[in-house]
Length: 207
Image (cartoon, rainbow, N blue to C red):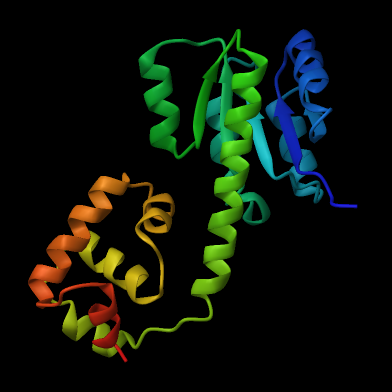
């Protein structure tokens, strides 16, 4: 039988924890933590989820600090974190997205919306893991790369390396947290500056 994804819900409100468990347990294995400290203890003990739902307004260690501490644990540094909070201000949403969170959902929430966005982040995380594994098997000669890309901007160089390693524009956008349109524009600039027509010709330059 296929194993189910695991989600860790961190919230100091027992009612909200109970609601989240009731909604999610039909589809996911659910872990619960009543505070940031308890969550960090679980993670450091090797209880690793596939996704974390995190509240902001918690006593002691708030969601911002908890998030920062989570990202310092190597085993969960790539686990997607979705803030699930009653704070509805655009400033709070912008703050957590700038920290590197994958999504921001406000309470009260619709069950279907919560499940759909969790599934979206889980699927995205799976694609990124698969891409990371694939990239580890495709090497690029750094000396040649540095010479060929000397005239590119740092962003263009980053995108060039991923194109050479076989990534699609969508994969590049997800990995670098860019929009697909921005990646397409960067790729066009790269082709123009390096005098190639497409990604196949670009890859050929590094063989």
